[in-house]
Amino acid sequence: MTIHEAQQRVDQWIKTYGVRYFNELTNMAILSEEVGEVARIIARRYGEQSEKESDKGKDLADELADVLWVVMCLANQTGIDLDAAIERNFAKKTRRDAHRHIENDKINTGHSSNQAVE
Image (tube, rainbow, N blue to C red; front, side, top):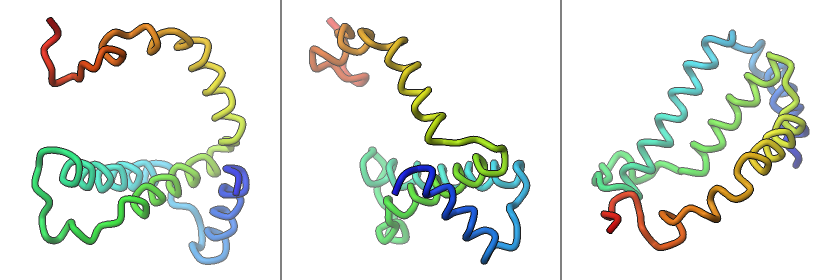
């Protein structure tokens, strides 16, 4: 499925089951909530916090899909074609960062943000 097809499916779902889109401000709040759920899983599963029993059944893939869903809702209701936007974004990043990461000694010498650089 392309991003465009996913946007169309979200739009059709909203029109069939969701009655209407929530307004943009509500969807922004929902997006923040969904990103927070992703952050909680990442922090507890891959970070230094211990995972609570209630968090162990959380599905990271499902939570990431929830984030994409709300992003697509916001794109649909503001008239943004995410296929075109991501193409422009790749071009921008390539122009801006063609050498930045390759030439970054912090990521090319094994140093992480937690290690002291000598």
